[in-house]
Length: 153
Image (cartoon, rainbow, N blue to C red):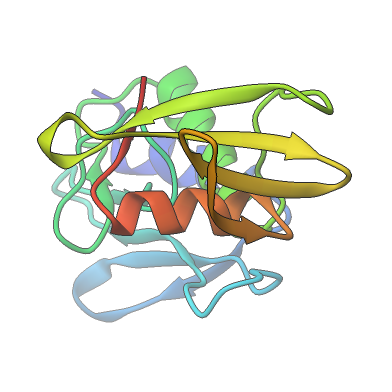
């Protein structure tokens, strides 16, 4: 487990984050260039070891109901990776490595499935051969699928 000072040093190493000291010795970090209302990347880093990183716009981490991951037991590399992913997710341009014409599959409630296809600079969601939705960014498609209870296969 990193000390409070070590965690703060990792967070401070991201020049795009703005440090905000809050009550009880805690520190928050904001990403002011966020494309979304959500701007907080780091939340309540405390000398007792607790600290939280926002991961609510991407998969792979167990989050609380507000989308934050407790990083109390993270090492420096894990923390740095998560912070970079958090910032990237807030740019509004997070996208997978899909090329034009490629697709990815998602599974939803009751075993239903949808596919996301990138074509002509748009992100299309299909239910079989039927078009379900279209979005200008992958992040919009991702958010839609998550809200509907789908997960990537």
